[in-house]
Length: 589
Picture (cartoon, rainbow, N blue to C red):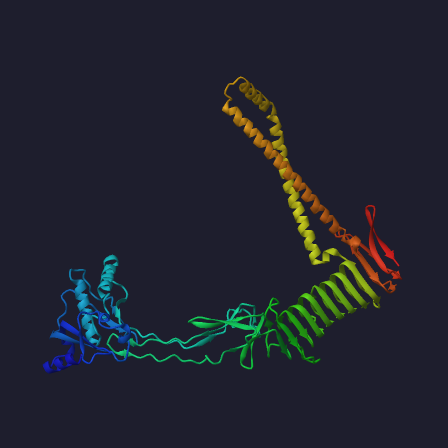
């Protein structure tokens, strides 16, 4: 461009009025071992040197051009309006062609476009010939598009080529996998044995580059920040390494934490309190071996705050569980009380001092049950003041007033000191029993219906089979006679006999299947009958004296009929007994 400007100035004409034709060009380079500049024969630089050398700071490259300068004259056919665009370091170059261009599909158009692009490359100070080997193919693709679709309507990006783009370095980094892809916003994150918890990505060096203008592009070394900061507890974490990273896996179930700067898998978390201000919810899942201990026990503060969710394997709370708190665990111990709006689900044993909330557990041990609700397999309560229990087996030391107890097998009470209590043997109140009944009833209904259909079909087939007996006997006689006389047996007769035999076997199989189905249906019916007798095997036991203000009710699981009594005086055990077609309450002292 400086030559163009100098000629324009010497001739006192505007720069835009001056143009040139490229007559020839020569590429010169100077490599690591070259004392003098070397001339390149052709455009394949890699035939004389290597990519590594071209990317090095030592390598030098330049081009010399023989040009013929002339006044600018528009091309008689081609009006290619375009600009040259490149990346920051000029390693990739494209021509952006404007839709207002005039591009005739004439002989020689490809060469005209190529020469126009090369001239603009030179005006931009770019090398030519070394990186634009695909330029002819790209021009052909562009012309084919015009031939198929007509003139372009939007700017078209025509790739010219790329030299040696720099490859940026990758700094080292740490990926905390145990914190990723977690839907909950838990205070800690639970992990399982074999789970990928951390990953250290090694730094990777980049590569220096070379721009399309011949300039050297230097790339800095990667930044190393974390290599010396990852320390692990080898008892709980193991590693795997390859060329890209070091991966850290959990050996045991628990949660990830740092102790004295080292990553470890811990299984017990101790907190003063769990609330939204300090911890938020703690949801690691009961499948991970994590125990949570909440130590603070202050009457004016909740140990488990309002609305907090806890989901761990074991939970030990010294204080109170607040309103709308939700707890999920295998084992729970609560040293103070539960709010009436709290929800606690325990797969194994729950031990609570004062319960006012909602509890579901396999086994519940409660010191004081006050207006709360408990659903479990076995429930043991020292003192019950109101509230509701639904369980297979219930044990209460002292029962006060206004309680409702639903049991499947037994209710045992040491002493009743209040009134308005309802002690109910109601098998359907127990979810597991109700589900068994529902499943059996549904299966019996479905099996009965299917058996009726199959039996009807079998009878129809059996009648049709018997109707064929006379004809089959005639065929059998013909076959025997033919065999005795040495004559050929008719093929049709043999086919009918074979079909008859196959049908007989099929009927036999169907009969056996029906018999098996009937036996299975009988077994289901017997199982259902045993479940329907649950009320006859249940009992209510009271070791004290009834005051005439406690209602005892047995509910027939089949008919839902209620049998009730309000006992007075010394009655140790109350049962329901079958007498003929009736059921009656039996009192035992």
